[in-house]
Image (cartoon, helix red, strand yellow):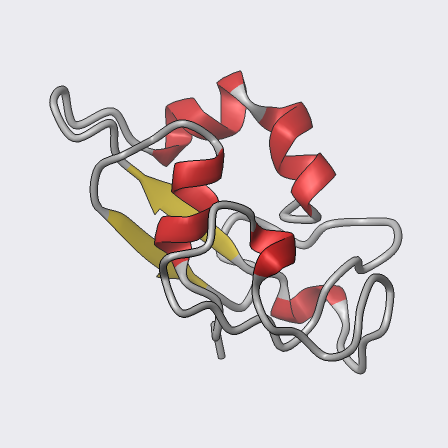
Length: 98
């Protein structure tokens, strides 16, 4: 279950348009450490790390089968996550959204 606010992630990456949460490793399972778990945003945060979560960095009880992703839009051109993933892969990895 995706419990974070996708708008926060998209805003942090510079996409002001509509956002859709994608759960259960929709874009594939990540590798490496899981950085955040049980993330729950109110929607007004500017960074994902400012949202409530399980208890800080690397504190989790999940596996990569629960990895979350987002579909972001620029708002004007309909630019979507497929471009976001390719153009901002390092930023997404830094957020722990592999």
